[in-house]
Image (tube, rainbow, N blue to C red; front, side, top):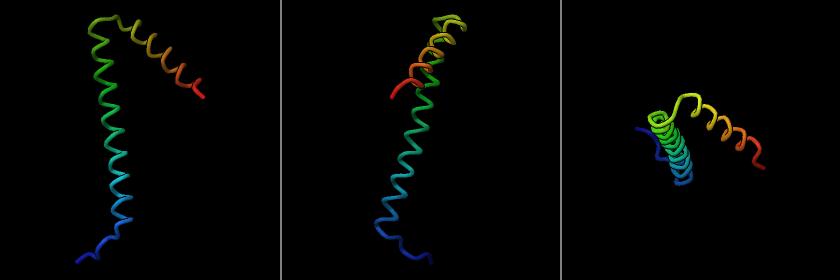
Length: 61
């Protein structure tokens, strides 16, 4: 039988799992957005838009 976990340990596990879920969900959402873009725009246009967005993100303070 495993020892009971403290409330603090449970809170840390819950926070970690929540963060992991949100990361996976965000990546999946981004992939869906890119797929949608690909249905209406040419590949090079999508790549150009994403490169501009990436540059903008890198320059955020």
